Length: 142
Image (cartoon, rainbow, N blue to C red; front, top):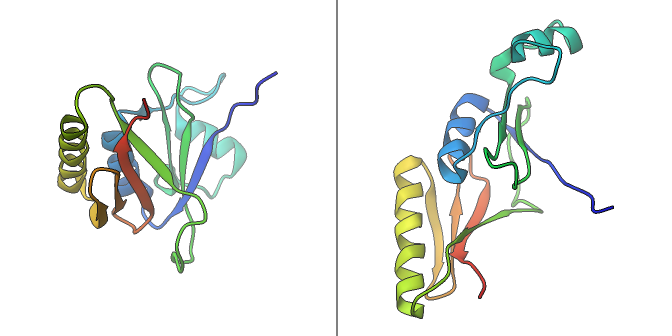
């Protein structure tokens, strides 16, 4: 059996970070698990003091990618991530065409709220989401 993974990212504002990662990954809000009709109902069942604003639950609409949970925590981010996401841009074409698509994707993510931290020309771009979590944008291998 191959294990599947879900990713959880601590955050200060799940609403803002959820909006960013929906845009970045093309994800959608994950429906609440059965038998719950809403995420608020699911939360109330597990923690009556929780608010839907305390988290965002996202999924790949195709079902291929891992689910992403963004959970509000009281403490701020204090150091570099020990794990980061790589957003892969479709392969194909010449190296110059692949790099142009990578730079265009990075520009799209800047418009969505990301920041460019470093660019390694022809290879990858290191970025940060609106709360400073690092990720990379790079051409797909192959």
